[in-house]
Image (cartoon, rainbow, N blue to C red; front, top):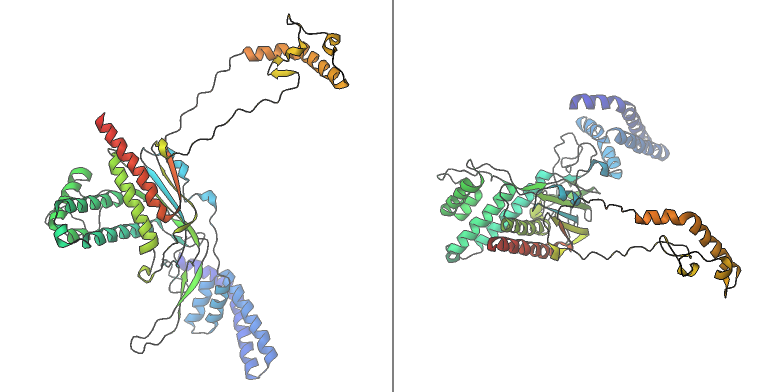
Length: 470
């Protein structure tokens, strides 16, 4: 399929490549003849031919001349660099859900949306082999928009949480690690990570095999405790899916980074390498969904929520995501690009903003009415009949007063019976379907995310205690 596509594109490129080569020969001839005007004209023709070729298929054009060992490939690359842009994916495709859709999911599900801005460039590796660069950034296959795949997010967050756990455990003194409380906490944190992401790589249910990274980190005794917990509460086979679901992130910018490798012996730079990247200050949205299944435990969800928040903050601001994270790439700013959102399918009134009082709007009534269907008593006799015009105008003056009486009289004779009948009719109120309980909190910095999650976790723990007491 790929061969057929590029063979088809080659047919479209023939005219541009022919012009390209003719202009190149013209330039060489002008250079031999020392004719500056011919060289200048040929140079412009080369640039135009390169631009035309790039519009049709830049990578095929470049690789064609690279296979021929021709310097014309550099003109193609220069034209491609000048026109390097990205397309925005239409929102109609809805690759990223709206946070309000959480209402349709099970109780205690939560969704986190973090609109971030890059502090350092993002690098990755696309699976496209036919490219004029050796290091293209990962892109959507249809729109060619730079992206972070959902699987990449899962791997980056899992790695960040493992590094957090390893850093905490290795930071304890050897004597402290032997304490029962610390051992229980290590196993509990490992269980939370397993519950979020599913089966670990290299994990074995057999208590005689310890191939997982965390098996070796905590030791065989703690590995056995973890294996027994998995067999008893999560899966007898050791294979289970995680509760976290990840969504792709699409960026609004694309750029090129220049890396200059140095010779280890001479410490001098070699040929610079162009790497496609997402530049500093590009924006994107990180979004994850947590859905508990099986028996729902409020305290369990509270722990998962807190560890997710800690992991997300560490991944985005410390460990990074994408390629070359050890060199500082793939880090975001603490200040968010817009307001972040965290929503959970639980009713926590204490965290909901007070609803503004909505005062009923007063009806726009004519001057002769004091309420809908009720005329001003000034127009009526003591026995409830309508006054004559002469009696109403006694002590009053002005043309407008008489006009007001005429309007009131007309309403009394024609519209009063209809209005009174409408008021007497009982209109049943429509039954509103109650919306599922959902609590939303917002934050403007990643450093605020931990405080918001602790507030929610605190109320979930309290609900657990109340249910036990009752």
